[in-house]
Length: 202
Image 1 (cartoon, rainbow, N blue to C red):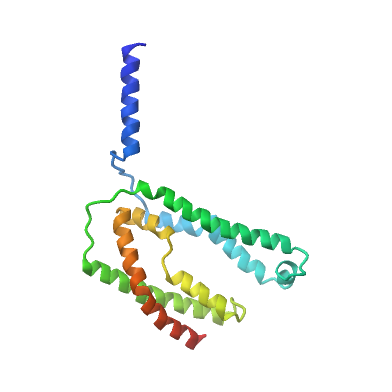
Image 2 (image 1 turned 180 degrees about the vertical axis):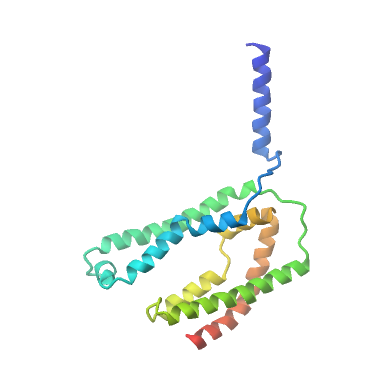
């Protein structure tokens, strides 16, 4: 084989090895605005809104939800697909974690305290206000359990936020994991207090 081809093949292998080991630095800038807009107009939020609108139509619940509903099989199938989607999304997060290398950034105690206060006090208060607003609009149909589940789910960070925060803050999985651990450690106290406020207003 020609030496030129051997040299080209060796360079190709070296470049592939660098990409696999993460030696090349990622310089692509990530727009937070594009991430938010892309998330809002993705399939899950769109179908969520369509589901809420469809549920407001009279007769839909009788058609799909009850045990004697004629289209109960479709409802059960969609319900099962929803659970599978949650599991698969967590697998996707786990399989992509290795792409985010730890950096040399150090997280101070002050930053951890401020971020925990912002999340557990202000962010949770915002979702309490929105949940009460949706309750007063009749979105939950008088079901306090559903309203409370929505409030808790939106007030606590989920695993998929790990990758998003890594992209936005241009940091590694190690630093974001430390922040999330502190958030979860401080969340029970604040969630308990806000739960009292939830059942006072609802």
